[in-house]
Length: 157
Image (tube, rainbow, N blue to C red; front, side, top):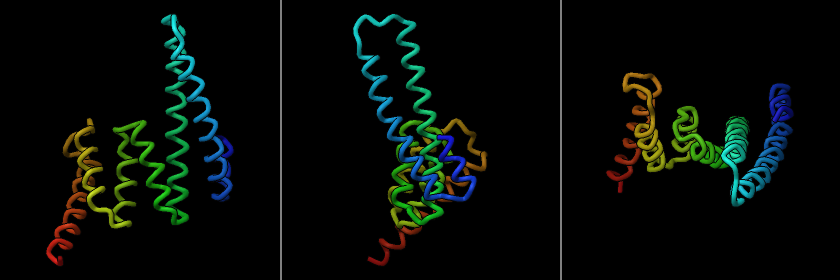
């Protein structure tokens, strides 16, 4: 994780992406290990809590790596891969507004308007932010734009 960030800060985005991918592979393997630990019979409450805490730390690490990778990919024009990274971020942290916003923007660029609307609707349903919040208002703006594209396509066809 540290190497990915250092290379990103140095401007070597390809190397940063390589380290993101390598660290994500380690996270996947660690996740398998901790799941096996949790599947054991006769765990003490303390053991179970320790194992779940390890899984939560992996979730946090994976989210930060995938956000970094998505931002690098956006800069490099790899929008589809960035969308995939953000999809996993949203699975892990379904109320993270930043992930929805970035993914919705990418989906708009890719012309995937139905998915934009679904993302925004899901975000609105999950967010704890007040209606007046700028992030929520931006989500509604993105949704309106996506719906306008869909409506225009329906009128053309």
